Length: 327
Image (cartoon, rainbow, N blue to C red; front, side, top):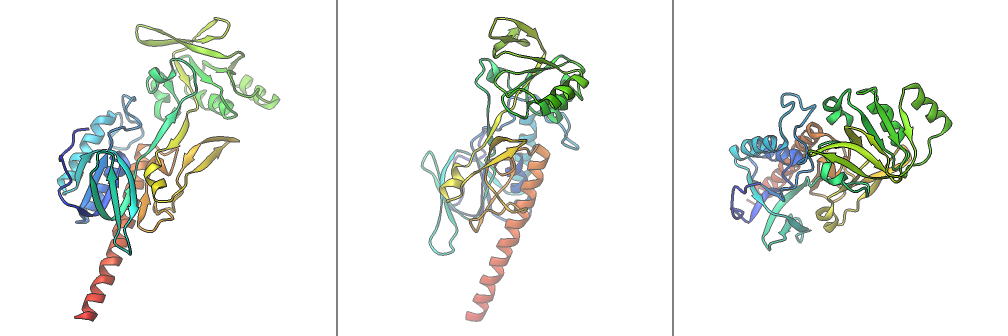
């Protein structure tokens, strides 16, 4: 990401937004349109950078991720939001009700009346050689994000936990040729074996040791005994780990999220508006909702920004009443 400013133009803002993805830029756009002074500090590490296109985003279907962010930055900046490159190291509450101080790793410091944290998450992949290099290309996790693009192709599902059977049955919606690789996952129950058989999903025992690649394309799954089974896409269950360091510096603790008897990651809890347990701090997007897609993250940023602005209006009103009484 190119910075629109070498330094923050002022030392105190109504709102500092940490993270410049869909949630952060949506929040910045909303708050800037509400005539708030807004600073977005973005580390430039969008989760969906490896993907070629965004899907299920009404009005922006198949837009490349970088293009969507560039459009969002331009829209937010057009209303006065400032967007700078940088990585926030920590945040702290100022004495009394004076807001927060945000520190970047390169030593810059800025104050804000409110904080909106939209730092997203990190996908931790199973330890199989080759997965990371193909992540977002032929190594996939979300059928709604990528299923249409690999429809009717040979698809493999790598089992690492109890959700694998569910994944295989889900992806069967997009292809008749789905193979479940047992790998390190638990053996399916008799009922699950029956479901897989009924849907024509093959089950292969043995540990997966790597991927076969030819001409920069994934072509198959290699098993411990050397056998290679041709596939054109491989589904994995990544562990979703919230980028929660900034929130943790304020005393907020991430919690585990479980799905189908498996811990799929960690997130920071909020209320429906994105408010955290720390007054004055909101969070939105994947840092608080692990399975949110891009359009949902943008909507969450809008929701949080509206709540932040409402909270600031209430404070502005209290201050105005107190000033009137004094005067």
